[in-house]
Image 1: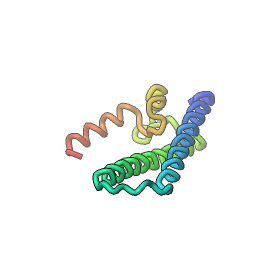
Image 2: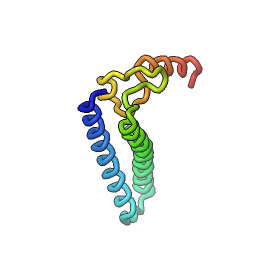
Image 3: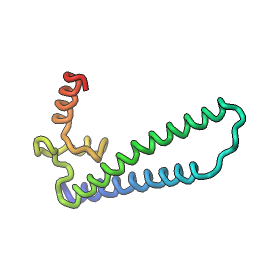
Length: 120
């Protein structure tokens, strides 16, 4: 992979991580602020449902942050853009669509087909 491409993906990943961390900070501060007391149980249930939904989203984002950190480490050790399964280069278009990927499209397609066949 060219140095210019690595710099592009490094900047992209850092920007994604900063955005995710900002959102996580907003969620934490929003949940620590005391909310209104809802006399109606339905209103309270709606608030709790919204909070649970937000926490599930933040959990997924936390997992994405871990993947971003691993991708940044791969950039540093010159393994970014190389498929973990076959060792071939991952296409630039695939990396632009999913910069945290560790597999080329062929290996990922085979893995997903195998998972579908096994019912996973």
